[in-house]
Length: 110
Image 1 (tube, rainbow, N blue to C red):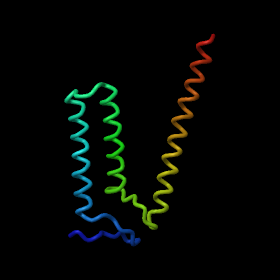
Image 2: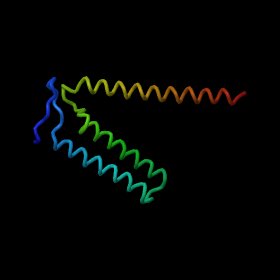
Image 3: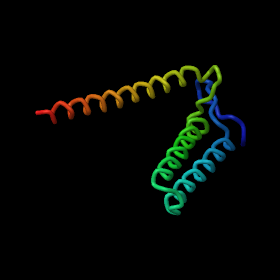
Image 4: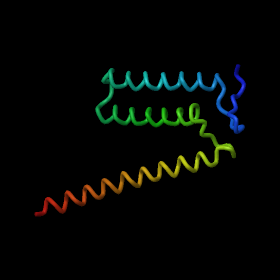
């Protein structure tokens, strides 16, 4: 049951054990985030930093175990599309923040 599943196009998907490992890691990271907030053991900025780190690790877990974004040659186009999308979203967000800040500065001067 741990053999790789293949789609009709021949692309391999993860094994059942890979999905279970990803699920367990996702649950552990979610529980750790919840515990970090509920324990009030860190300062507000420390809690925010801890949540950001746990969220980043969880994104990596999801990308690897569920979306199968690896460094293999068959994943090259998926990785390029993913990084293009991330770059586009970053440029869109930074541009929006710049425009909104610039508009606010010019409107306050009147």
